Image 1 (cartoon, rainbow, N blue to C red):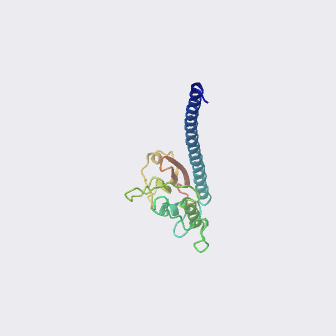
Image 2: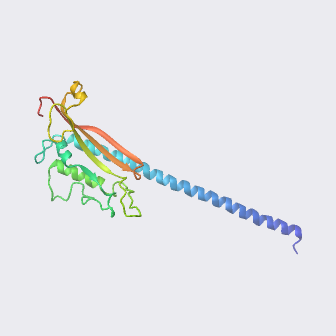
Image 3: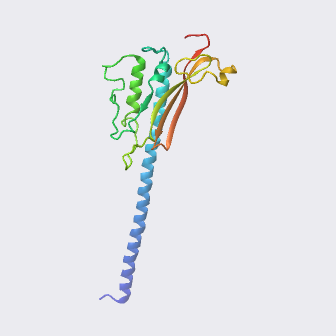
Length: 215
């Protein structure tokens, strides 16, 4: 026969067990949230590392191929001005990757010119979710989120010439004699990550022409 004193003790034990369960549950929820945050941080850090690597790949490719010619273009930079890279895998509803995915130099049926092959390589690397994650979204109204862009542009600045594609021929730096280039080519790589919250830019000189020197 259980007396009243024992009944009180049993009741307190059950209450303590319930409180302990709630406390442990809250702790597990906090741990799961921390784990989720850690995973997301690792993914973001990995994407930024990949973005740094890919921008360096483009810069090295451009500099190493800067004197290559194709078609009517006398150097790689002029070719890139007319053939800009705009990887739109994040901008399309289906997220369609580049046809060169997995074959960064194409399938062998296209042009074998170095400039064309380099451009195909960049498209395969940047216009694919296989190499760099993409979080572009389609809004409820069907509109497309363009926050995650991957672009490469080359800008041609002219000092004393007015050639095709020149941005300016009346720049104070040129007129003051501080820059001795007849033509200067500046490249800009832009990779937006995490729905545009993280951005990677790289500006570098892709080529130049000295005054009075054709090569």
